[in-house]
Length: 428
Image (cartoon, rainbow, N blue to C red; front, top):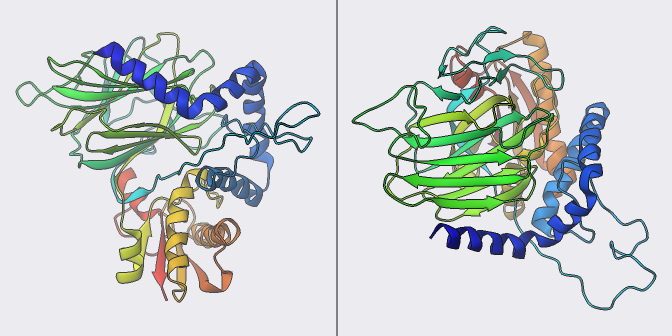
């Protein structure tokens, strides 16, 4: 049974990703080095240029604009310079090239269930809401802002202690920086605790009564659904693996038994039956695979999924979204915001008489005046993205910054602060 599932997964992968994978294999080590250099160059680019390029790349996955095959390795592109759409040689075959269309369908939910950025923890301490059978500490890094949990224990597990009652449909996101020797260095597990023998620290290979392992590897992705006394349900993909010594944003969308994984603005996996039926997840855990690899993790966020954008904006007159995100202290719209922006643009295109006001909000950390100015710039960046990338008329949108003046939750915990950092669309 295991071999059959694995074979089917590889067949599907070959059909959908063979061209891109062949291109990546040819690129080899040069592409990996180019990817790292590209990330470094992005830091020096203008905010508007970064936003346009990132959103444009994500839009290709929806429009099917792939005249030249592009690497999805964080900004490395393989455009042909001779006008031949990537076909080498002087003669171009009359046979049409194979092209395909897909959809970047990730849109975060409208309720934050959990958020952890380790901002409440002192540098050098072990995070107060977590436990382990190894070691770890909160650190800062030179390539990204904020606090990062360095999971540097040998063959250790890291369990979040309070239970989280997950709905059937939810989304998990986190940022991870693999170190220079990372291969399969970390495993993220969602599981159902055993009610008869609950464990705050569960170091079992397959914790709880059932669960799902998700393994972001340097050479690809793996998922493994499990349940006591039953066979594994496996998923495999080699598309868009994580990049070492770079911030990787991982998105996992759980919808009943269905598992979708996103990375670098692409859907990596879509497994319709990767979870055994009837499971109610209530625990999360990271565990180390490679004793030589010690990755960094932060910005772990869990939200509900599939908000009704149309109903909330058109019928209720107000849409609060956590799907449009920014780096700390910056107004650049991040690439993973594409799905949310597109859903809003679709509603505006279908309702041409509707105008909106875009309002940016921050939490209370930092200077009040700077937060107000930052929220104004973020609202303007959202408007610009809708105009430039989706063709929405600028005259239909107003912008406003509210800073920290209109919280919807106390600014006392990472979860509540995450709820206050939001973008609102108000129907005019």
